[in-house]
Length: 388
Image (cartoon, rainbow, N blue to C red; front, side):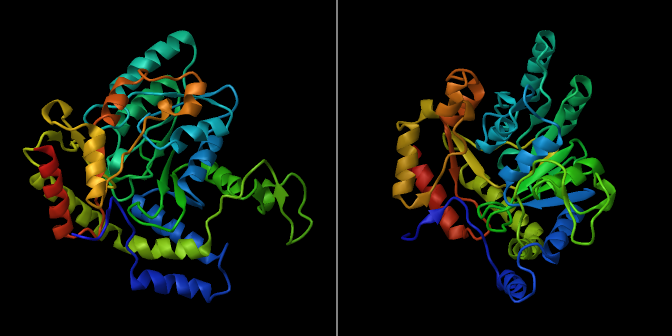
């Protein structure tokens, strides 16, 4: 086994290449018809009314927070077991950010911890305006319970579904927004489908959709009915608010529209490989991923947790020896509250026990559509050898 096995990678077909080339040869390569076409395909797939393509999931989270009314003096809660963007988006809006510890089985935001924290926050008069549950590794959070809490405590819900496209919750696609105001996908190359860089926001609420459309393009509208004065002519537009340059290009959208034709195929293979890992790694001194019965994961990641009290190596030794074997393991995630920037805001090690315990034991092992069974066998055998 000589070639490097990454933890994740894109799969680009000739059809994908042809779709991009077609756009490159067309009249539109930035803001043309491919974007609306891609948005419609994704919204139809997920069963949501509206979709807004953006330059990244981070951009999507940012303007989703703004559309939800998050601003100076407000509070956003999210999971510490995520990429920093899930929390940074609140800071971009001038809000205060806090975290809710994770469930030790799913590694998603714990509903029990959320409820307990909400009870205390209500007593202290500091309830969150927005809660961002993160569908870690492709498995949905317990959205029905979170939605019930939002009804009681009055917060808005933005699903960080960066890992989640192709997954299901209670037999409905992640992104349907049945239990949320908005959901945000990522199309980074290691995700389920890719547009290179890019993301998309889903919603069922027209007022949020209209706001998101403006915010991604400098706060500008060309709709006469929204203008503050009579239009000067067909060239006219008005900036109604401070927005951003968060647009996706037609080139990216063409790639995404082509990729999504294989989404079910991609997810089916990931599920097959995940089940195969379950069998190959059974009986070793580690914890395998657990799936909530209400969910069908899209398996963006396959994370093992080492039982360090039962092996003779440290977490770091196992990680580095796998890397030395040309297995591109990774770690998702360093708890956000332990980052120096967040420690300067007052957070510290020890604040969120489960997320920190998980971090000390977790390793993401290779899982992607093109992973061969031979390579998967090599990964599993190497893990078994190291843990003996």
